[in-house]
Length: 388
Image (cartoon, rainbow, N blue to C red; front, side, top):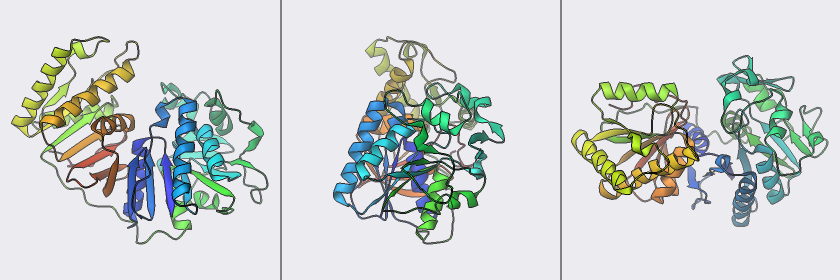
């Protein structure tokens, strides 16, 4: 009935977690339309890491494929709650594929302290341009105006500023993107008041998607979350240097779990392949002894030409080589871009969402195999007691 397309993997997993919370069957694919007849299908892309043109192309392609299989499918375009990524460009592609003329966009998450007042975006009561989001390496918040935030991300595609409406007024009177103020859950639902599936596309945060489910009476059971179990054997992989991530790895190390950081020679632009293979062998030996391990690039920012891309590729290669030699039932990954690259390197693209361990922390099962992947954004915390 609904297909959700997200611009990063952890955002897609968060949507799947909400579906599980309400007892809704959900299918999950990476860059593909998942097979089956689940009520909700979720497609994860990594378009936030791509160029504008690439982001446009992948969304046009995926939405077209979805509607070719089922012309009556509703599309929800998941976007980042603080409007990072190619939001307008991806909406433009989705509008073209669906033929819709109006978009109800609501990125806010009031319960998470992310609100819009008088067209200005606030995080915990502070204008977003005065928060850490101003220092985002890819999509810095140079303004707090929702309209300007959206337009600031567009470089190569024609967008008419007048087509962005910051009030719903008495309905959706003209074509364009409608992004109204939002300070509460009631405002999230109010934004859907004029939704018409024949003319409207809906887009926004995971919190907005939850209200969209309720609006369509798809909340099959009372809201609930699962009590997380404790895992003793696992591989935890992190590309994040967020303080929460560094602290958590340190706590696991104190409990006897090996925490393995890239050696200095893997933190340089060039390296010798035999040294890479030798280090992977060392990782495998540590895992065999302890039955678990934490794998990290570094605890600090590493900078050289194309460092972000190259280090991410190396981390994915380590995990791929590791899995070729050692079967691991439980893989935990921090960070959406990291998770996307690792799962693509492994050639895994279709999953069955199993459990929402906590908000944004979701356990997926590889389709047709007893292998589980648990993912979360780098800034989120793992549930207490999850890993030993």
